[in-house]
Image 1: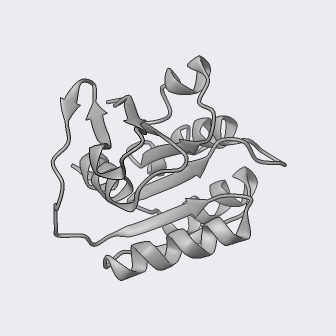
Image 2: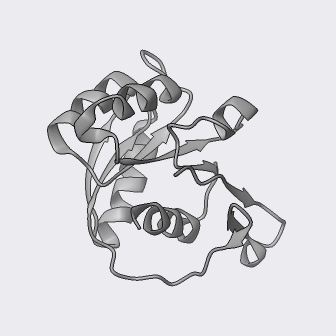
Length: 149
């Protein structure tokens, strides 16, 4: 099931609303365990997101592009993949399609994270959720927990 998600970024961070197909997402969910594959071509993003998710109790694996993401996903079978969309070698859309085409990975949740989501990305069936960068940590955690259900 694809879940379209928008993070509306008003001027006050406390006003950030996250919606999954029009449903407001509650905050403060717990029971955070699982394996997360983080895919981004920016090493500082990989490091900071891995550090954040580790602090929340998740195990993380990283990949620097879509080709590495496919390889790591096949090796690790993560619960959730956080996928940057605009990357060299293989972009996030192509990587998500390749991952979902493997029988062992078809049910793996993929969250796209992009600075400028296009209509193509928002409607991509391989993405279970789309987040807009920058994304508050609470919204990222809420999205992970939502797609894992």
